[in-house]
Length: 567
Ligand code: ADP
Image (cartoon, rainbow, N blue to C red):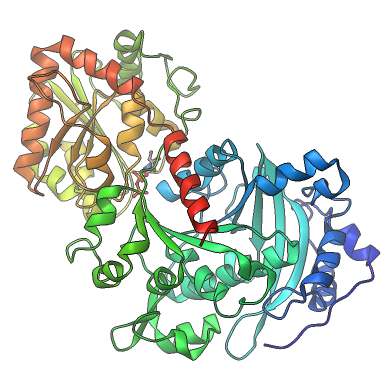
């Protein structure tokens, strides 16, 4: 790594650029000049902390960036407060509402919001993808930039930091057109491996650059898994090296696995981390997730059951032995949902708002509106089964596919919203064409329609092969729509099966991954719906009153952060 010099003299041009908005693209010449200046700025493993601070302080002046260390200028009492607050950096590849492809995006938004209430100061670092809608891009403020060496041959890349402060959370978008200009966050591993090597290293360099040193760096999934590896290697001894790391597994299926020479080149990591206990997988490959799991101070996953399951060969995605080895630092905490966004009483996308007191009546209005929108027979006596999902093998869609003819009995309607594998898209489209009025396959990603399906359906199907946590069953319960789930991962931990003897429970469940067991669970739901509506309605109310918020989980994460800080 080349050593960089530090600057102590403020640069008026650089300070002026700090206020450039994303709407006014920074001209190439400006960038080059900025980068050149920033070459003299300490950013990575060679940073000299004291002078780095000076430069970073300067860069925050005048902009709408967070005022740094205000306590130094205030009273003794006020000085004490920030010191007691935990500083947590969230690092992940997506974050609602800027960019979301699945549950990870929801978590990256909602958990920081909940942590603020637990006396945490949270900064979220995500890529500045070009596909982030213009409305958000325009609100970002230029926070600074520098040059960073990345590859094993010392190749250097521009790192820009665009910042947006919203609802008490600071969002820092890592900016680099070469890596983040595709129309979708994820494309293929050939592009994604370099992209997320760059991202992981750039986030740590950015934290040093901003002189914002977190107590805990909370990394999410394989795209951020190299963060703990960089932290304990190339960033050891730099200011950010003092932080502890937590790596959360949202889905173990995706791991960032590629051949060793490519990963060694792009990551620039030292040879010794490519051994079988760290990054190496099998003979030829290196696995970013595996490396992160080895180096993280704590591993969490999004439900207690999934934490157990991934230590077995069936769910372990070839990392079960590695996870068993690290089991002492593995914990499971179930996700919540943002109950303000998912709130049937105030959801502007619904035909009729409702709460637990009037759900039974008002859900009918939503059902009628849904039937009308999707071209289904408009009859609120029909039972509507919804399914909102990525259409992939993980989600149990082969089971659904097998039983559709058995579901369409004249009293039942089925609504599927999702995109994904062609085999499912096509099969559902065929069922749609053959069963107009009773079956609708809406092959798209449509946030608004998702809300309307949650509100207008009677039950929601989540028959996943594996499900780390699952959000759709939580949202369904919040909307008084009863979940039908397979007993796996977070589905098992969040849906208590209905007990006809005690009249307790939140939904209908089945255990083995077999189509007839899914059908049996749906039939149990149908029987209750059509023959004991009062009991069904009681369950609707019970589900709507169930606490599915982040509060509980945030308290548990907060406890783990404290544990980490004592290490
Ligand atoms: P995963 O992260 O595995 O895709 P989760 O259940 O954790 O599954 O989260 C899925 C999230 O994405 C939920 O918020 C769900 O409402 C949303 N979602 C999934 N598919 C669609 C779609 N086609 N249109 C709108 N929202 C969708």
